[in-house]
Amino acid sequence: MNKKILIVHRSEMVRKGLSAILRSFFTAEVVAFATPDEMAAFSSPPGACLLLFAEASALPQPSVRQRLCQNGSLKVVSVLLSEDIPAGELCADYHISLHTGSTEIHDLVASVFKMPATSGANGHEGEELTQREKDVLKLVALGHTNKDIGEKLFISVHTVISHRKNITEKLGIKSISGLTVYAILNKLIDPDLIDPEKLI
Image (tube, rainbow, N blue to C red; front, side, top):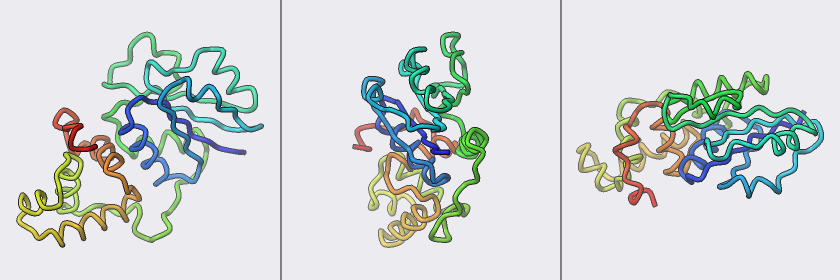
């Protein structure tokens, strides 16, 4: 069965971060849209198993949901800003928040698709980060430069770059936005401390 993961979220950081996390675990195709209108042109292939991650304002209307389901199956995951589930979002099949860990996201997708995670082609992906790598990741997610990170942790810029390379290989996430979302989902940083200007 053709398996596809759709993401509809106005935040580029959430779209790219969630995409990176999902791709690090699964081989299913991930397609991201900024608005429901962008997704309107998407047509599911026959027999497709679709999993849609969407923010509250992008949850599919019954007519859209029916269209996406007509060629296969569709499960909807509401991406909430907090752990609380507003009454209007009960139409989703599952709920996650920005505080949901990557392991929980993996388990949710694996149960919907009934599929195993990918093992990682480079042999590093899926390994635990060391404490020092977590320290570097936190500062990267908060928008600090390699020079800033080196000064804060009392290490050379060369060492910072080496740690960042190891982090990317272990997590399978290359973008800063993806690393930021990973750090939030794994409770390494407080989302309120992020300065969006530093992530651009």
